[in-house]
Length: 137
Length: 278
Image 1 (cartoon, rainbow over the protein chains, first blue to last red):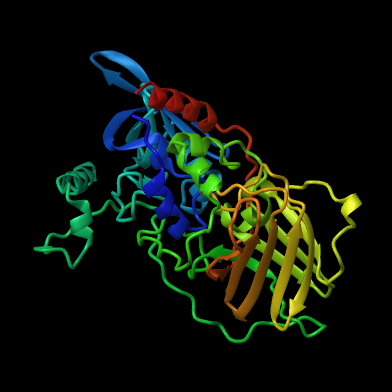
Image 2 (image 1 turned 90 degrees about the horizontal axis):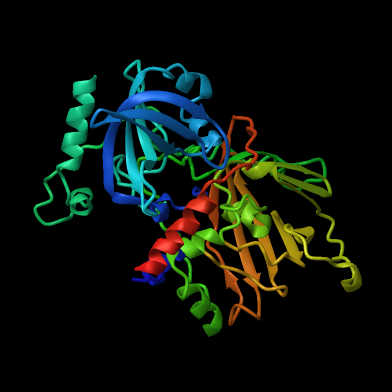
């Protein structure tokens, strides 16, 4: 089914905060989010989006999970500096991720991470509304 | 802590009626949704007006400062309070422009977003598509606008000089710009815009006839306001003027933000194929 943009477009025309690079909810499924635990293997800080990679165990196999984060500007201002993130590389973390809608497995938008030291750190848009803000940003 | 987080998540996810839970007026709405507390979340606290706006040597308002969208003087991207929708008229698209927009899926629309392709956001995109703070430097006769999005800038004379002659104009992302003061409002006039830019981050494309008039004012020391008008007879049935948008004075420096490698474009192409196949 070809989803037209009528409703969403009207809503965006009315709202458009000067905040969003673009809407994560287009790419990622707010109804398919989960907690993923694994070893943080790499932090790749770039723009417009940073990425982290986590090796998770699934049925005894190691599966690499890719998480899209916000921008370095938002991450740094929110406290998720590269040194803060790198401190958990090689350690177990928990990431809240919403799956890609394009059928590509193991690719998610991350909303937050529980770092190795237990800190819960915001990483991206509120795709599923867990922080109290609307899904569409 | 792990258990705490788990409980938070369970509490959050166990409440599927999120919309009702967020609406205190919802029927039987005593249910209170529990949200995840994370470092980086922002609870907005508006700045006070801060006194009168400073003025330059020529008596004009000095717009200089690092300005954040919203009233907090800080990055608001991860606010835990939803944005208030702007109160403004619908954009009067010509029927063929509206039809073109409606024919596109969300993924196709995003794929055409200049920001997704790491393209310059241009005018008025430096305000409307840029989610990061703005540094403005004004001097008598000059306006300098610096943004983090791809480290873009624009420099405009504010002496009311005319645009370049028609035979010297070329399409530019920021366009051919001139500005003048109308009282305490700086009015920036832009023509000759490159058609690859958007007016807003919602698919609003424009033609080579687009004429953008931006207005900036500083009602008090801590606040900046921005409004823009678009005339574009090939896309709009009549000119459209935005609501005034509020920005507030921060005390942070801009940070480097070059757009170098957006994987979204490939991801969105795949999504487009998935959507078309259904």
